[in-house]
Figure: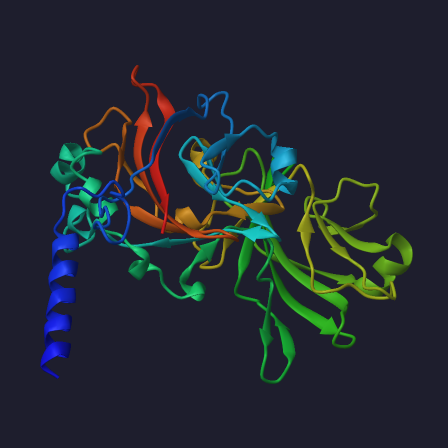
Length: 367
């Protein structure tokens, strides 16, 4: 037993001597001590053009490279993960790479108790002062998958009906208004009623609508229009409505709203669209008694299908804090989940050396 104790002591002494040796050439090995310096990869600036001539910048986080793609190519491409275009940040929605975003909330101290931006915090912040926020985010910060938000493509007229998943019953959302801009006229309407043929579709639809012409300063009094969907499908293979005329029309007329027929072509389904040259907004709170044409750009009218960005809920910047229409980064740290990994990302700049806007710089590293 005494010899065994001496042997153990000798081995421990040798191990201690080896661990304390400064002669090791393998500085990155586990035995010589791991380098714990955080990895920080910086990119940019990447130009997204001017407000008059903007363009997308597509970036692959896996390879840490910019991809040169047209918008049409990008729609079919699964390699890019995140894209930038002026103030907008976009995530890929490809079926094989549906990218998600989660905001860590690292910069809460940039805002006061009422959620108002603290100007001095934004103005004094730099990429260097906010580096610690970035490096402090580790894999431990990655939440459950359902906490990540994705970009979505939506239909502007979604919401014209309600569905009860318990009783499997659909009903008209009679209190939800839409305003359509088409051919110089604004039409405020709601689907006030419909008749269900069966679970698949509708045999008639009742619209309640009011128009505001180009020279009008408010919407007229509401009127109703009930359209026979069965007759529409039989005659025109779809339900087409001209809001100006307030009547059903054919597919070759100047229609504003369209509802496609179901598979049997005998009724319309729970689907509604506006014309390609029309735009619309949702006025679910019935807030607009008129459209102020002088401020039209601030209503944010959308086409039939529009893109909802995950970053819109957690905007990366503050605007016009000191005048001059300048953008200030919040230096927020976002987690970007791709099909292959989760990355952290921090936008560190929107201007190049010549102070030209639309030039993104950012940090991004895999967790």
